[in-house]
Length: 434
Image (tube, rainbow, N blue to C red; front, side):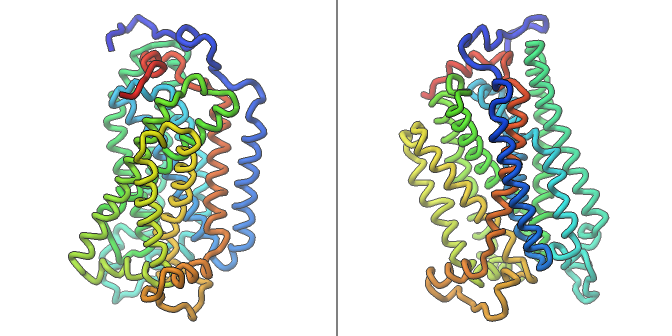
């Protein structure tokens, strides 16, 4: 960047005089309120119908962790663009900033998980621990209620602090046009990404992996991040497409930007596959009982079919579908791929979380009559999965996603649609894929 400390970047009004810089007053309010209402109704209905049985907490954890990954990766995307000083993504970055801006509310949405902490979610280590269970006794210095709460607070303080810092500085640059703000954020992004990596890794350990406190995988945090970033890209593509239909961003985010977002979506779909295969291959090769039982549980009660479904739906089909340049440059096809991968992301969260219900033996209401279907056909296994499925297992994901989307639209309505005085805005507006 060659601009001096005393120069100011040109504004969007200078570079693209006909482009809308802001949402019209009152516009998108109906969609915002409808999404917030839908989300709260779904979460409330799940609470009312599933609270007494305890299944609500498992379903809510599926939805919460799936959507939290999207919000967190909005923060990651923002810091990544700053540390690389990327020019192509400037017109997309404000969407990521507004997604990350929902993290303070995601902290409030953590309350149901805190309520279900001792029972039923983490009772295997938060409650009475068998004195003969030497594994849990050895982990008690980490797996205890007090330290769990302290870590949760530290995670949210880190995420919210970074989100507010980067979004606030970007909004300030809208007013001043000071290019030094971009330079400062590119420097802050380096330690910010380190804090992000550590906090997200340990949050995945605490909130998902510790559901089975005897099992561990050092790559688990990376697998959670890979799926979350893929889902964030899918959500951002759909959000940008929807805003374009409403008359916003269509002159700013072009097919060239969607092409790059599609390439990233493809790349992180493959990266999710790579990290999960690496985890599975190493555990299978070592063949240690304390490691393999996690996968053994996921071959029972119909979950074997879901493992197969993830291989096909999270890798083989989207790999073939998204590989084509033409798909990534076709708005309808790319939107279909994004919707498909969001649904698969929800199923992936179910696969990680729900088999741990009822002491690691699938849905608690599946009952003792559930058979070991790993030796049956895919259809038999999938039928058993459907038999144990509750509407809450998808409803909570949709509910939390709707709340997060509504809050994101609220942020969009209160800010400029893009960083209107970013020094790389001109480069982004004229971006062309090679």
